[in-house]
Image 1: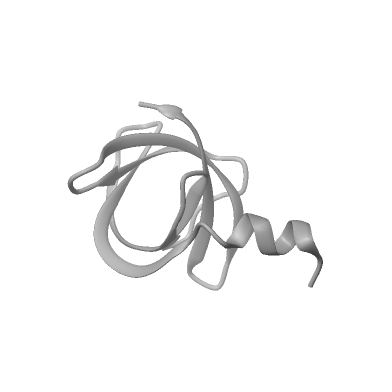
Image 2: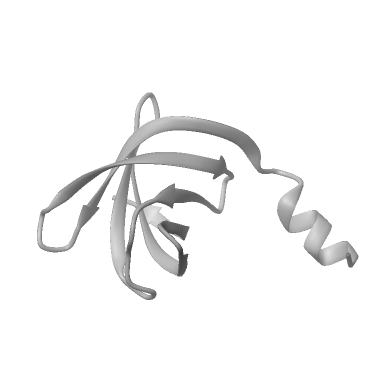
Length: 83
């Protein structure tokens, strides 16, 4: 593991919390949020790579992001700006 990989992962918080993802068309999907970090998180569910979504986190609010990867019912979202 290189130093850059370690640095990107060190600020992640291993957790499992309920949240929601809202798609551009307004459909809201209940998800389980994992690996929360300042830059993004992973969520349960099937999403399209490149899709712009809003992640709703209890106690945090709405965060806009882009789906960076999606594999086997899980997706990684990189936050872009506050929704």
